[in-house]
Image 1 (tube, rainbow, N blue to C red):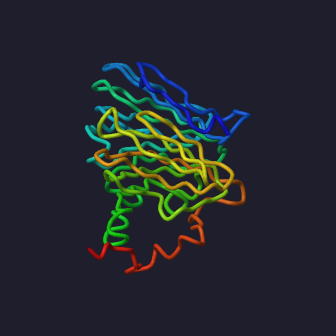
Image 2: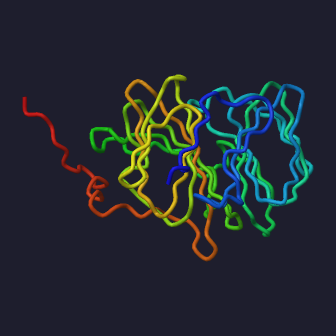
Amino acid sequence: MTDVLIKNPNGFKFGYKPITQIDEVDCATGIEFGISIIEKGKAITLGKPLESAYLLMKGEVTFKYQNHEISVRRDSIFDENPFALHVPANTDGKIIAQSDAEIAISQVENNQQFEPMLFDSKNMLESERRGKGQLNDTAYRIVRTIFDKRNRPEANLVLGEVINFPGCWSSYPPHHHPQPEIYHYRFTEPQGYGHGELDDDVYKIKQYDTLKILDEKDHSQTAAPGYGMYYIWIIRHLKGNPYMVPEFTEEHRWTLEDNAPVWQPKV
């Protein structure tokens, strides 16, 4: 599967850059994902015939939709919780850049209607630190789940963020699920890197990379020492089979146990 890792080594310029598309044939996720860089004073228009989530990566913007007009600012994806506007298909509105701004856009097909919602630290599903005190903190990470079926039952998307601490693992122990998923990565330093597993295949991950996760492959991640790693995770529910919880690989389940025995040097 040569097209599962998509690289954008030069980053993104003003405008919209599609990274994955709904109608792809090879390595298809059924997810439209891209990055929009908006120049100060300009705007992007909503109203696409797709369920859409607009995740603020950086900058100050005003979200205008229905009778709402809400201005927010985000300076750091590593240190600050997200702002994400989630809307059903054909929702009118716009996102106005009060400074140069970056928006990650995720879209899927969905004919169901639901109430548009701007998620932030007050109403997102959870932001938690996982793995503390386990495995010598080697899988200690921050997991931010913005929405899934628990708080958006009509949605066909799941949206969240993960922060890997330098030298640590996430999405661990190895797990899998039949629903397609996308990871999009950033690092605390532009030369930062990490590794993403897809079963026995290992991909070196760099700044602005995107990884497609398909065919129920196990997909643990790790950041190189010295570099914090951030990734957006986007899952598309399957008809009649929505994503609820992952299935952990049997041989590594023991690492979830409290006080799991971990080798320590004797000298």
